[in-house]
Length: 371
Ligand SMILES: *Cc1c(COP(=O)(O)O)cnc(C)c1O
Image 1 (cartoon, rainbow, N blue to C red):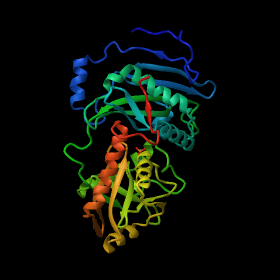
Image 2: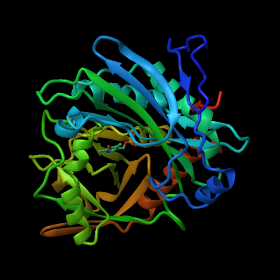
Image 3: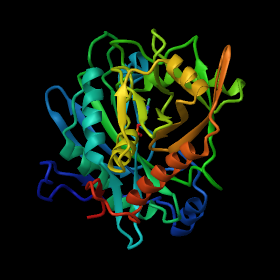
Image 4: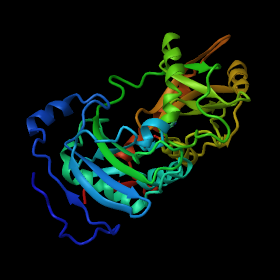
């Protein structure tokens, strides 16, 4: 292994980074084979970022190392009490070759909010951004260039102190790994069917619903399996009062007849950056946008009366997906309005246009990572 000893000057975030090159990195041929059909979350790049935090030393020892297993004490708090958070974003290859990501300061800020809720240390935005750039510096060749492909970036943080007492960990690890992602939809964006879970909730008032933490996903797996049994690809959750919250990993937006977009607002929803961006683009086009409590009866009755003509789900992985049917124990909603799904798809096209550099970035959302 060749180690660049820390002779460099501190980075803009005040850290001295160490890079350990992966001597077993994939050959260009092996990489090209993976990039030709990457799927999602199955293949990983040659390196990862690893930064330590301790109560005494704060953030320290930032490194880029070969991608590989993490050694953890069996008593590490994350394995017992789930003190963990993550982020999800994409790096896009633009036509002239540059590598850019979308609204990363929003991800950094959300990770800080998640950290606060999970009693983890807040990673400064400068270090967050620097960690993405450091990984792209060594693994930039892993950003694919085919249409709708990207390099999915997964920053995450967990409690690694070996201690079984219940309190916030005094030792924490922050990592970034990256995984090439193929086009989410091959052959046109297909509408999804959604199962409405009435038996299970993903979050509760005052809980961790607004934090991007593994526990929310753990509790969504059983209802997700129930969704599959009902022939649905995704599950939708309600709060205790019957207000619509979101899907397992995507936000929901309803489309009204007059073009108004309505999305649930609640402190137990994960605030998606995709949703925020789509709603901004819609507002720019003159659509009215409402962020407020949305009872499931409003959706049901609105579809029956013709007031609600469609719905879509949104998140980084799939971007925007029209919702075809909503199934529940006792009722079924079917969206068949072609204009509503055309609106969802045209907002999707505009957003991906900005992300891939085909459409002017008038809000200054893109950040270059390969410089
Ligand atoms: C990440 C996530 C979303 C979508 O957020 P984006 O920033 O748009 O990717 C929505 N819901 C949940 C539960 C999530 O974890």
